[in-house]
Length: 206
Ligand SMILES: N[C@@H](CCC(=O)N[C@@H](CS)C(=O)NCC(=O)O)C(=O)O
Image (tube, rainbow, N blue to C red):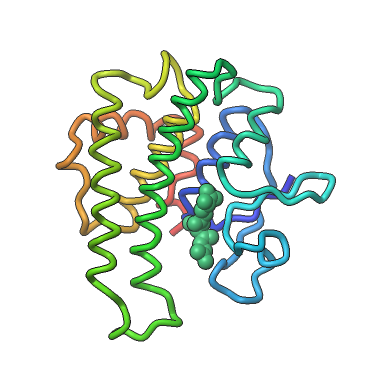
């Protein structure tokens, strides 16, 4: 199976970390999504990574769908089967994905080559940051004093949150989220040391 990705992408990292937890080997195909000639355009009409191409040539996107696909393969389940628990995991995943979406929007606003410097909007970036702050505060509330977001072990919820927060540290270091969420900040330092996360970290992509 081939995973079209960029190495710093937090969405692709979710998939890579979930696969690592399950012991699934993925062949990584690193692409530049902002290149109009990127091979991803022929696989995902939205021109985004990650995109998983399975051995039968089928292309799967986006990251929640790919995670479901991979989680159905043998190995520890990271998306619980029981409905209420499953939905709790999916909601945390959605919150983490929303934080990533807003963070990536800030990043693209500041680097997209098709935009002149005077076209970049500080107001738009601040609007996106409000979403990051809201998401981070809610994640802090949802975590509470627990070690895991849902239940008593690792799920896709924990992987998603760790990928979102480490990406913020990596790409948007001047916008501090940690003072907003001290418990989450401490939790991340432990969670990120897990081998599947440590081996896929954004700093390794730099
Ligand atoms: N909802 C998508 C979001 C993926 C996404 O935004 N990926 C970024 C890279 S981190 C991308 O490919 N951006 C290219 C673009 O927006 O043109 C997912 O969960 O996979």
